[in-house]
Each structure stands twice: as structure tokens, then as C-alpha cells.
Length: 426
Image (cartoon, rainbow, N blue to C red; front, side, top):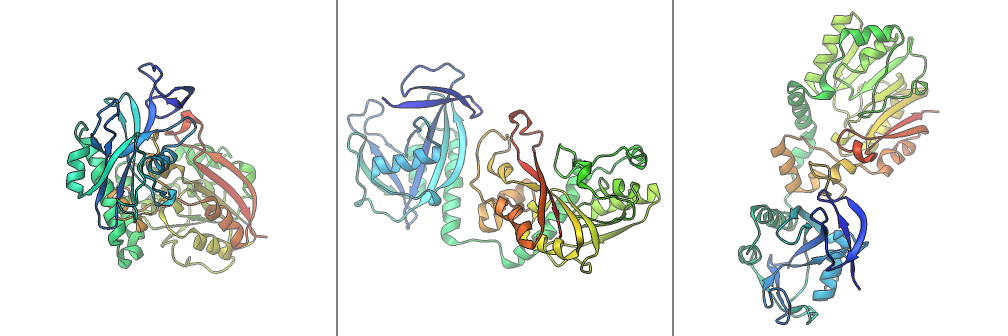
């Protein structure tokens, strides 16, 4: 007997399995998948349900089916294509086009995949108890055929799938000029966020600065968890670089502790906040506008401590940053870094459903690039543990400590979506 897993409406497993056609409560959902299969000539596969099927016999429809117990939607999609059509589609070729909750289809969580695949109708090996025939049609006919009882959300997912496949086929990438200038895009984006009251662009008030002068202080590399004070060296007279650390939040604390501070950022608004706080509190700070994707404008062995909050999600190549940190640190110098571990990029805006396959790189995905630009999110990138932590080790740094953190979106799940690391140049 075939079993299925049950989920809540947000896609969280309930830890309960039932027979495929077993009874479910109104709060219980199952996982379903659709697969849009496109050939090299941009024609889409329609399959006709068996004439002896209990439900909609003879209906032409999209390939798909329910996930079995223990399966992900991707695994279910690959299995369905294999079982019903005899097509061996590699997981790496599949793209997730969209997700939705489908109340009309018996309360299912529907994941829609798309794939461009070199195949022929004649080469399909049909499972006759389920599939009567197959044919290839253009996208317009495909949509009109399969959207017989679907709403505009589903139609929108199909349109996004077609854009994904056509963009990949045409190799439409952002121009090399745009690749070189994405730092400018991000700087202007962050300036806009600061103007709108962005949490990480609000400078500390005088009371926080005064408390730090009395030894009462904490700073963040990641959203919620303060950095352990034992991670720091004695701060009096210490040469500190705030790398992509503008905003008037951390550097004022270090200045209050007696450090000699330099801040590097590419956002005019974030640097303006640094100037404002330094003028208000009467301390000196070197303020440098520069792009950390380039060589840092400092001599070798200039700093005792680099404080680098979550920010390398706005650059594509993080190894360059770790190499530069190693170069400008003095022997025995400390690098404290906040890192996005990539999970944030895998989820949708509600942080309840998987939406993107990693790595998340809009410079290699024109549809994703366009979506980020339209949403005003700047150009952002996911990075692997090999890049984030392995990259520090590759640069020559020695990792001495690490902790995990989350943010408000994932706090209720206690899901670590950030890391903070302490590394030393020995």
C-alpha cells in the first residue's frame, strides 16, 4: 500500500503518514508536483490520462503526481517522469518555477518544476494504465489546456517556467558591464533602505555610546545573538577595520572602548551615519568609501581586528575578501565575520516554503535578476560553507570559534540561517 506524508498549510511536516487515499482533516495537506517538460524546440509535453482512469479519463494534462512518504517534491517529479513517460531526467536539470497551496485539488501543496530536455515523443515509454498518449504543443496551447480549472496564480507560475526555460536557452545574461557594476546597484539599494528606516542603517543613540564608555556594551555580527566578548582583544589603542560595517552601529562602540577605528563601506547613507555619530560624540574615525570586491585601499598588516557583519551576500566572489582580510591583518590579528549560510535564499518571502534552488546567483539567472531588480532587493548571492568558512582557511586564517544564529523570520523554527566566525592570522 502506498503512503503519503501529511503537512500543515505552511508546508511543515506533521509527523503523520496515511494511506494515499486515506481520510484527512481540514488542516492536513499532502505534497503534489507538476513537471513542465519542454523539448529543444520549445514545445511542451502534454499527456493524456488513461481512458480507463477513474478521474477525468482521456483528459490531456501536465505531467505530475503526489509525493510518496519520505519523498521531496523534486524526487517525486523525477519519479513521475520516469514511471509515466520513461524519461530519465537528472535532478540538476530541474528548476522550481513556483509553489502554491491548491485547495481545489483536495488540499495539496503544489510544487511546479520545469525542465528543458532533449527527448522525442516516439522515445517515451508510456505506462499505459496511467497514460494513454503524449503530444508536443506550443506554450500557448499548453497553458490553455492545463489551466482548465486553475486560477491566475497557477497561470503565473506557468509563465515564469516558460521564461526560465527560454532565458536558459537563449543564454540571456546580464551584460559584463552590469556584472562589473552590481556593487553600484547594491550601494544605491542600501541607500534607499536606510532612507526607509532599515534596521541595519539606524545609528546608535548617545545613551548606548555612553554606556559603552562605562564598559556596558554588545555588538552584532548576525541578526540576534551578540558576539561573545571573549572573541575580542583588548580594545584600547587597537586598530579596527569595520569592513562593510557602516551605519553607525558597531564602530561607535569600538571608539567608545578606545579603539582606533576605520570603516569601509560603499553606501553613502551608511557612511553619513558614521560621520554623524562621530561628530556627535567627538571621536575620530577614518571613513573610506570603497568596494570590497576590489583590492582594499590599505597597506599590508594594517589592522589588529576586522569586524565584518553579514554583508558578503551582496558580492559574488567571497574568496577575494578573505584573501584581502588576511593581507591587511597584522600577525595575530583577528577576523570576526557574520555569514549568511544560504538558507534564507532557498525560501519564499513568507519563509515557509522552499522557492529557489541553491546556489542563488542572479548574475547566472536572468529571470532571478529581473525579479530582484523589480522588488528593489539589490543583487544578492548565496554562498556555501566551503566558500564562507573553507575560504577563510584557504586564505591562511585559523578558525578558533563559531556560533549559529537565526533571524525573526525563522526564530519560531529555531533554524540557524547565519554563522559567526572568529579566525586568527597566525
